[in-house]
Image 1 (tube, helix red, strand yellow):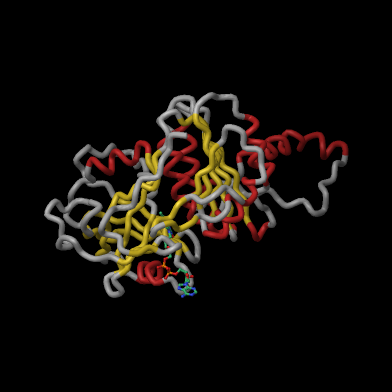
Image 2: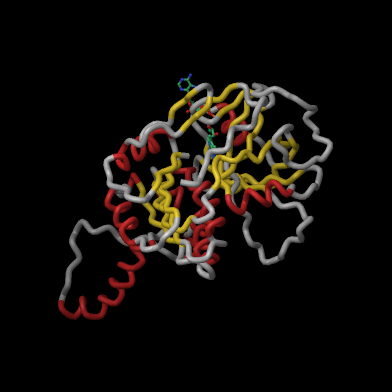
Length: 343
Ligand SMILES: Cc1cc2nc3c(=O)[nH]c(=O)nc-3n(C[C@H](O)[C@H](O)[C@H](O)COP(=O)(O)OP(=O)(O)OC[C@H]3O[C@@H](n4cnc5c(N)ncnc54)[C@H](O)[C@@H]3O)c2cc1C
């Protein structure tokens, strides 16, 4: 298997937690002379927009305060890596990792040297130090970042990905979707689980859409023969554009972009409150459809409990987080040539 975990930034991180936190110390003055994002020093960004996604999460748009374009290292990581940046909480001297969302295509083609905004999906954790601090910041505040930190690289011959995402675990899924969108013949399935519908409002699963189409086709004759729906059948979600949440719209855009070169991106939505949960057969069904040769990956990303349930615990060895043995639901399944990555 050719994907590999890249070591954490050396020397600077002196302590990490299972929640991805890091205490920090300075090795250079905070204002790097280059003024662009780098893994060694914190670079100031300005919070230019905070767009609510739900009652607990928002997309933060950050702009390099020095007006410096993103460095080549960032252009490179977008092509083949899963990566994060660290944000500093200045009073407590702690930092946490966050996963940049793919840039949005806004019609205007940005020049190579124009600064691009960084967008982060951040959930406010109850009692969480850094996420609460960030959610309280008003627009125009300065936020300091360092990175990129590569979490892993996608294999060069990657052909298929099944991505199990829980909550904000959708951010790395979107990074993979945009990287795979450049790889001819690749295919990706995202199975995205949320506690509440508000996180993915208007999201209609691709396979439900198939059902919707069937239901619509049935419409003319079912009224004719007096076909009755089962009383407990849930209404199909409204897929009207106006009701779609921002992340759902961005996933739709990624799907559209992937159409040109790939065998497609498909998204399934699951909501705890609606009693829809990802089931092992949702994974096996998609594994069995695969006919391509090349690397095949199942990636699991989300809260610790979600990762543990699907793939078993990650472990800490000599101060570093490692994959640990495959456990959970995936550990009980016959995965054949599919490899599993816990994020
Ligand atoms: C590579 C990576 C990428 C990530 N990407 C994202 C992302 O894109 N978006 C995102 O929202 N998050 C992301 N995270 C998670 C993020 O880094 C933080 O862990 C998260 O925001 C919580 O940090 P916090 O400082 O707010 O919470 P913390 O202060 O670390 O607390 C976290 C939770 O633990 C509880 N807690 C804290 N201390 C104790 C204690 N002593 N006893 C009991 N409970 C306690 C808190 O109440 C809270 O609920 C990522 C993590 C990693 C490792």
